[in-house]
Length: 412
Image (cartoon, rainbow, N blue to C red; front, side, top):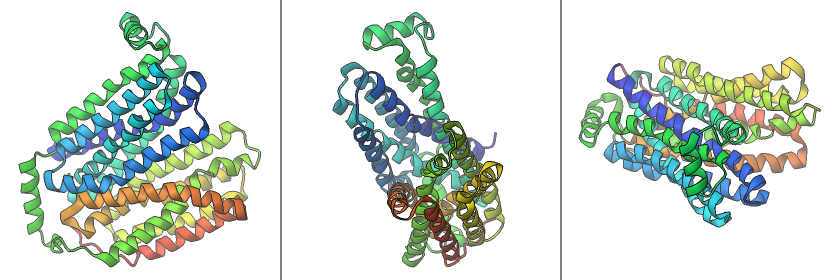
């Protein structure tokens, strides 16, 4: 396998592993609250919200470090830190039954995720600069796959595991040493799943001196002639695009189940239509990434968001198969812009791609979290259907604004 593909697969598998564990948290907290550590909804929400916020805010810092060193140990040890602190948190919860002893390692765990993301995004783009948008989309597809798999894996292990699943060793470690029920042992022992991702990233991400050699070559590239110039106006425009898209695409999806529950759909049905939204969002990134490597990225991003607007606008009005089609269109078109936003941020400051990745990803995640609160408050005032109409307008405006970004030169 060529070296650039080994690098791409390494950061992709690291991203997959990281996001599997990240998405397990709500399921595990729900199980703990119901079985051995009573928690209020407010306590669960506090732990999840603060952990997500900390993971978002630390990304620019780790991006700066990745630009300087290449990030081999930042990314690989970040994965270990994330998984290790998650495992420590649930072990403390099961052994001590104390919320606050669990709370602090659980909230600190996403610092490791904040370290992995900018490193992975940096090397996903640099593994093959001529197809950076497609590679970035593939990197995020691996993460979204992890987000989809994590809850299912946690649920299956918690629901189906039994004392015979791990044999004598599992019973001994789980029950006698940790003092926990055998059916919880697999979640703790699952930390070994992080080993392949750690080893791949620790061996295939360029070393410090290799990174600086590659950086020197990029400095000589005429396409990177901007050097360390920081295009403030372009970043303000890109920030406005992220805010409008985050409030619309990320903020509204939390209310898709509620929208169809109000129509009388059962949980299986509104759960499935929400999943179809996310699946379309994940795979459309590959298509839009391929198009962005061949055509003007601004136009691809504009069409992505403008075409999503009618789907969001009409989604509240329909039931049945047409509603599924609109959900797939809404998720697919709006989700296709995610990797393009990161690549465009990298292109604005090509000699500081790690910082650009960390800053824009932290901003995207933070904006999405705030957007959910805003969309919820607005829907209480004007109704959920009218809120989706507002979302459609926001996405259309975001698409138009993307054409105000500077056009990027193509690389060979």
